[in-house]
Image 1: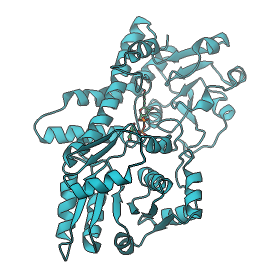
Image 2: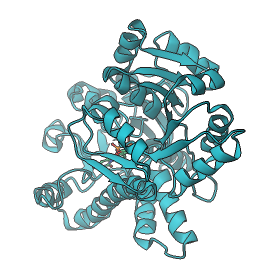
Image 3: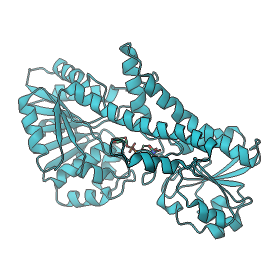
Image 4: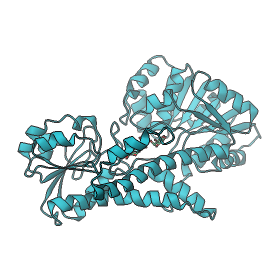
Length: 425
Ligand code: UDX
């Protein structure tokens, strides 16, 4: 099949490359000339393990091309995937400006029957909206179908997730489109959920919100465990072994961040509110998540003293999780902002992220030198095996606050550190 991917971000680029792997011819369309130039040259403009190698591979086989020529791209392809961003609007809902723009272009340039697929995370009713916008912009009524096919990949493991999904969701009422989508995914060995577009759109929000809920649940429970000197990791393990619960997304820490959970939970809350059926459980999820960095700072104050002014804090990890350079809604940046409000001096480190507050590019040693405490905010593997003995000699005070419960508490305590995790007793 000839596939057009509109929007070359994490989802678009990964999706396109996966389809190349399946033997399809793929064109990536983006209006951002710089992104197109970079991708054509085989350079991924964001960090995602394994993706750049695949990009180079498929550019060489000529299976993959990038363009900013919207009209030709739409006319030349059979299947069009909408993978543009749906940022959060000020009221918490999803901003569909880019999706509507794309739908308008498709309407203007549609030259024969095509299937248009929404892969971006979009609110319930968007497939219908895209259909209307396309129709409104057509000069001749050329038939087409809009399918909802949400993406569940995670940043940091995008390739693995996209190649081996737990399930594929196809939301359509058209038998023709369903047949084409089945053909497209015929080599994937996972269940395919075929449903109405509205249900498909809801599945994506419900999945992300449920995962966020698990995280907020264990984080709030961690605060209670802290009071009782219980190790919350044992609780995660003890309940996670119940297959009805499962062990995933039960890691207590600084809270969830990223480009999806915060935005998607808010969007679902907003949808529910508009319908007069508030999702109070999700409102609590958001509240707990927002409190988590504050709770951690309170923990720091209990040992370092209530006045953090003139204290130097080394923050390890800026991205919202390991294996990505994405700092959107990163708990680390939220913590840094709050520490700056307390007038603490901040030094930052990240293995990949090339920004910081203030903009510094320090080695680990430089970051912790003279620090009163270090805080681990991102669970980068690099931080597990640091030479703690030598780092301790550089610090002013040997305090470790492990916001991801990733260090061996006993080991660092033996070296003379004061260690505090998130109910990591
Ligand atoms: C998420 C969904 O997992 C994915 O299916 C969807 O397509 C996009 O949104 P992503 O945002 O890439 O993916 O990251 P994810 O691995 O889900 O982590 C989200 C946040 O939750 C991170 O900040 C992570 O550190 C945090 N997290 C995750 C925890 O705090 N505890 C956990 O147990 C798991």
